[in-house]
Length: 257
Ligand code: FES
Image (cartoon, rainbow, N blue to C red; front, side, top):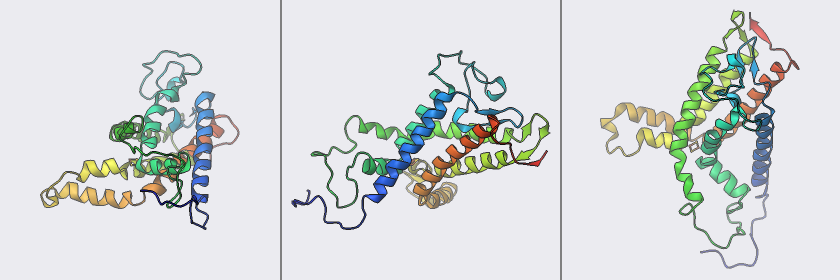
């Protein structure tokens, strides 16, 4: 039941600031991701074997062969079907159906409602019980897909320690490691992951390992919003660094070899 008052809200604080920053941040990142997706270049640094997570796995015949760590099962495809097009539906699906991002864009973009105690413009409310929002329930399956992609990113980050001249460590290696660390923390802090680990158990005492992991995941889960933003921003920064090195705009800062 909505309050029967003529004002949209009685709040006098800057309740609009948070949704505004959210929509600006998500919009900026979406534009960057779209530009990089269709650029189809500067995703691989051959000398140091750095592969940006946005192009991993690189599965089509147009990929630089050395960047295709898992082969090239897909043929060369028309221009707009760049390698990230096959990854993005899973990563986007994972983020879009994420419990935190739902809150963020329901407020910031959908204004449903934009903030606590601020009326929304919509007349009716059906929640997530009807199409298209019922698809939010697919989150667990996107979690599985994103977990596989995370394992691939971890493989890429480890493989990057072996460049053209053999073992080496550069700033790119550190960035790739921090990136997979943040992605792993975000993925493990997922509400679905927490439920998979500890949900439906009647007696924690009979499942000490699952209980122990559920406790760790629950701690991470408390930081899910922070991990959602930091991992998303850092993926873009990782991609930007690799694009700048790959295009020759900057050189990689080397510590070993
Ligand atoms: Fe956010 Fe699963 S709830 S990733």
